[in-house]
Image 1 (cartoon, rainbow, N blue to C red):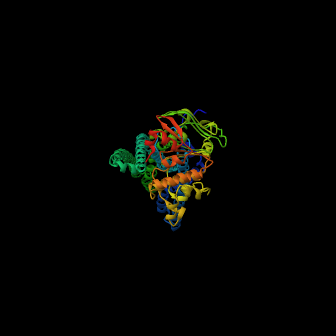
Image 2: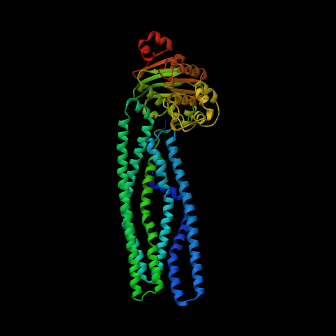
Image 3: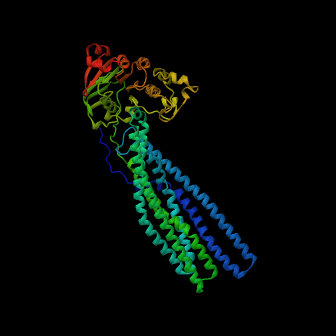
Length: 566
């Protein structure tokens, strides 16, 4: 058994560097195009100043025509560079967000659980909102550089008219960014907290959806909704805090930018009044002062977006860099081997020992439901092998020494609450599309009435979590999927609790017939399944206390009779 990987996880900065590195080409192209856009935008007021200057001096139609042509070229450059620049950047942004969504989803779907303290609803938030906000860094950097280009061009143009105007733009820009950089840190901290609270609210919603039926059953829905309301209110309050901080940031940026533009305009007016710059240079300076507010606004917002992207990347790092709870070995089980549980101690299990020979159909009835759940979790490798005592062997090999692919290929554990996915009956039974054993599995699980009920048959649409199916139909669909997999060893946990007694009797016979010659273990209290098994093991007090046929146990064991008789 290998030790789990305990390497220190990389920070979110590494994720941002990865995103930037593999989109270098698109970012260079986007930066060039957006820089050209900003330069052309900046050239517009400069061109207007030159037009005023030369038209007043020459007063010729030729000069006017050249000026109009120059403006047309500038406008065309502005339009095309913006269009193609944003197309390149947004395509790269969308593609990168998709990559991170797939990576986070892959981590969540890996058969080996990761040591991360997040619920499924929180991971969903990381895979959607955080992935999108992390990928925004691809647009942020080119826009930051292009805005800098605009500021530099404006400063140079104003400096050529008068050095004081150029210095005023440079000093003012540095001062504005220094103030906003400090404010952006609070935005980053507030955003991280907001994302965490929204994720907790999402996790609560997922839990409520899963448990809605049982909650209604015992009247606990109002308390559950109250719990969600509290979590949602916390998220709302934090969202308001973030909005307030963002508002202060945006207002401060706008006020500082306006102050700089006003200072440039007033300084240019004073210089023109003193005769130190011409009328054309005054027009250029006033135009640049008004125009420069846009790139300055964009430039000043970049630190905020960088902090948001960093916060999202840190949350993604929690999932992507979390070490696995266990590292599977490289071995494979011997074909046709037995399933052995040797002194397993976990939760309520106090040293469970039994073996299911190859081709045998064995049932286990647990007097304590928690013990059944603990045993199913151990067999499904939902509990790391080093986290419990004893050993589980598949085909003569300890389960911790097997690769996870080998375990899944030889041993399938179908939980009592098997998930139903949006799609069709067919895609739920045969997700891989292999087409094998579907008809036999549908017949054995008595899903035939559901198929016959709908005109589309196996292609009948199924909503998310099987919302358009009854509890019994969902359970039979899950059982059909497990049987269609046709694995060498199959473990079923309470596969018939939601069906009536007659249907249960028929399913028990069908499963025993279909699985003949293959190793099958059923954890159940169903008399029909217990009777169909070759032998029954009694799990009581965390240990196996009896091993006999169902009918012999009924005749000789009064406690067993009380536990399973209906």
